[in-house]
Length: 61
Image 1 (cartoon, rainbow, N blue to C red):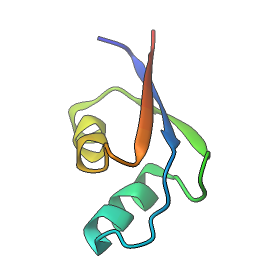
Image 2 (cartoon, rainbow, N blue to C red):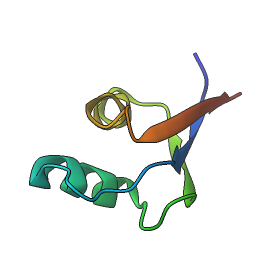
Image 3 (cartoon, rainbow, N blue to C red):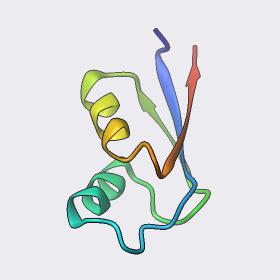
Image 4 (cartoon, one colour):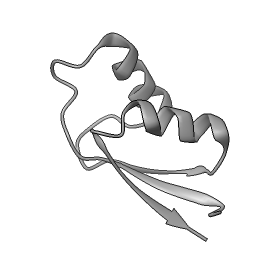
């Protein structure tokens, strides 16, 4: 399992449910193509799963 996840917002939040928008915001993503690195924990994996159709995720060891 990777120690870090590089998460990139690839699609717009227009038309998304408020819960999905809040999840993206709590990950620290604001604009399209913005990128953050987060630790690979179960709670971060859950947030990524909720918005997987909007994100691009890479595992960094």
